[in-house]
Image (tube, rainbow, N blue to C red; front, side):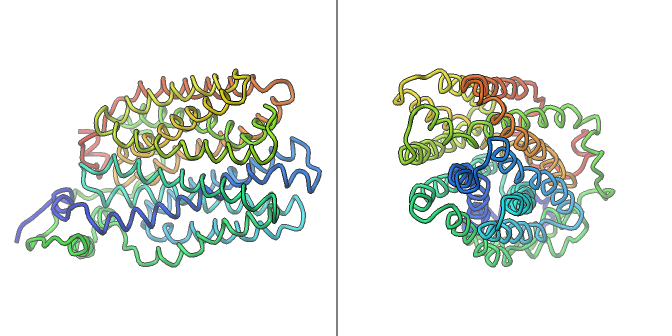
Length: 443
């Protein structure tokens, strides 16, 4: 019987039907999450009109989901490292789609704010759980490309949200938009129950036989017959602690990733939460607002595809830095543009580079943390986006009263600062196997 490391076994099992099915299951859930996060920006004008909301109240509604996402990211990331990936993989999608559906029936504005916060609690948890489980099933050569492509499902969710807003809100109202957008997540909840636990997680926690059985299942689904094998168990590890993120070998990475996630989220949510309002302020009527928002969402797809190509050619860090700086440049040009065709053109490039940067960041972050800390590290880093996302809508509400160019210039600067932080990262993870323990990282 042949003894293999986990990486040798997953390489032999190959990339095939199992991983493609898992990417679809994770990706459709990710698209459903994007709809839940972004649809409020499309519904906001109609909600504000129905309840006569001030800009401050609109900002609070945009902030609510991010406060829930902050708690969800931290809690579910920790749970995922302590008791396994699968519990969160199933539960988070049920929470966000269930409360998303209830949001459509909110009788008053305070009820809507509370339900959106609970929706965010589920959405925030999907990020660290989904990316951890997917990364741990991928062979090294395919990992970066397919982690970026998984993030590309966010663009599909953005398109769906923009398309539904275009079709639904003018004719049926915002409540129908919230109700329809929650249905995909409810369906995906039942599909996710069939996905097995991460074998890499099982192996690190001493469940060798279970890990071997799942790897054999992966190989069978991929049409590969593994030889009789036994997994080499990694050295025993203590239960991961959140403070291990500040281990000397990880401290610099953790600090820079927190800066990166905060700044990219401040730029992205600051722009896209208020995007329909920016278009209205530039002189567009309501229907062209939805049409052009849909066009900007469409531009995200080639942004992801180009980043998926470049992370395996240039590497993660360089792709991330270039796309972030370009995002800042085109956000500023979007703010400065005066004619509507130029506004839309600059917005397209802003959307292209911003979402490509997100893809590269999602590929890089789970790769730099060991298995014992992967979801905790990813959850903590993504928590920074929830803080920024909570600040950005209210900040936009406060600054838009004076000038459009002031908040947009601020968001452009956030992108550039994130690009500088990316250049300071001291690990390039391209062509590197995932690490399992802090001891391995230290070496």
